[in-house]
Amino acid sequence: MKVLPFLAAFVGLTVCFNARATPQDDKFQQIAKDYIEGLLETHPEYATELGDHRFDARLTNYSPEALAKELARAKKFRQQLDAFNNLDQLSGANKVDVRLLKDSIDNEIFGIEELKEREWNPLAYNQSLANSVYLLVARDFAPAKERIPNLRKRMEGIPAVIAQAKANLKDPPKIYTETAIEQTNGTIGLIREGLAPLLDQAPELKKDLAPLQEKTAAALEEYKKWLQNDLLPRSTGEFRLGAEKFRKKLRFALASDLSMEEIMKRARADLEQTQKAIYETALPLFQKQFPDADEATLRDRKKVTTAVLDKLAEQHPNDDTIVGEAQKVVKEATAFVRAKDLVSVPDEPLEVIVMPEFRRGQGIAYCDSPGPLEKNGKTFFACEPTPKDWSPERKESFYREYNNYMVQDLTVHEAMPGHYLQLAHANRFRGPTLVRAIFQSGTFVEGWAVYSEQFMAEAGYGGPEVKIQQLKMRLRVICNAILDQSIHTANMSEQEALDLMMKEGFQQEGEAVAKWKRARLSSAQLSTYFIGVTEHVELRERAKAKAGNKFDLKEYNDRVLSFGSPPAKYVRELLGL
Image (cartoon, rainbow, N blue to C red; front, top):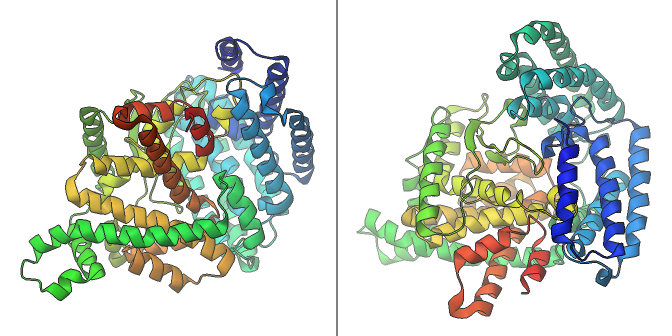
């Protein structure tokens, strides 16, 4: 199925949302449509992810010539948007979306001209090497006989992407190349074994594709050897982004007016407040566990909190049971949200899965929501097993972190009523353009997930045992923001990072080690959680103050989710707060 009908549907909806559209509205909407059309055509994997399947046979062209064309095109459209500096020219959703589009194009230009990730980040090519294939297998958006020919075309294009990666990559940071090697192992497994769910639906095509599968796997094996033997020895690049680039990237990532310095100030203050709150939650549990404890011990915040967390950590899953535990908790959390009437619950399908190997190494879990143009509305909540080379002691440490109570809080964040619920609501938003559907705010999205942990705990979900995990997760969110900035702008060492996470955030060693890796593999993204939840809580408090005794949490939450996933400052504007 081609996505032109989706675009036509959105054009038809323009009548509903811009019934009094001005000539300037029409002009902006045409610019937005033209820009997005070109963006999806040049980034076909992203189009597939969104649910636009017109380009499913293609892969991104990573050549310098193609990148130069992208840059010229972005600058041309950004110049055209200067005509809309006066927002009074526009009506309805366009007043917000013109600013979203400007920021998105500015971010694209910044990425090409200054970040230049294609030169130093081998992970940047994984979207073509693995995700492009996985996307055609994971979602049943069309019959197998329609998807397999595109799968063939994409596999045939993988050697060209490998050649471009080899030509472009210069001196990556070592951690990036090491992770690329790990993920390439997963990509090889995907090609050799992970295509079966799709190919088994069309046995007559499966046999014909077998030689190409082996040829593609062999090309990836050769690429892995190149990563190991050629690129890794010269991977001496700096993983720290540096203050100047980090400041710019942070502004685009957060879409917030807060400076780096203000964010750090707020994070340090919130760290102290949350440590106090977690102690106060832990104290009654500690007194039950240790009824004979003396007064000096009871006043020791860290000792009390650590003892309670250690006791709760004794009940935990393992690699074999983590998915089953998450499946059980999804049902429990969904029932709780409905019973407490906290927010409207969508009916789109949700499946808990083991995280594909090629996506591992950057987080314990993720929510893979369908794109706003996708027919198959299934969401995947993926859980990552521990690395095979970890010692039994480190695995034990990791799952003590992700104990049964923490899995409840994690499931709230990733699934219900966190990412799954919020993104299902967001996909229902319809505006005169696709701007808001395509350019979602990571800060709004991650902020909602952390905020949902808070309002679930406030409603009594899981009792004090889960409340203490929610506060521990809040400490992690705060530490994330401190880590993010300190690593990339202040030369924070590994030991300093581990001390912050383990001593101030009460994290287990296995989690802290994994986060140190993730923090080196990303920049600005780890700050989105803290700023996002801060903005969501502030929004709710403004709404409470305005509504007084008439404030209704479900009505408020539904209203916030009705605008898609724009930055919180625009939600505040749309709510009149």
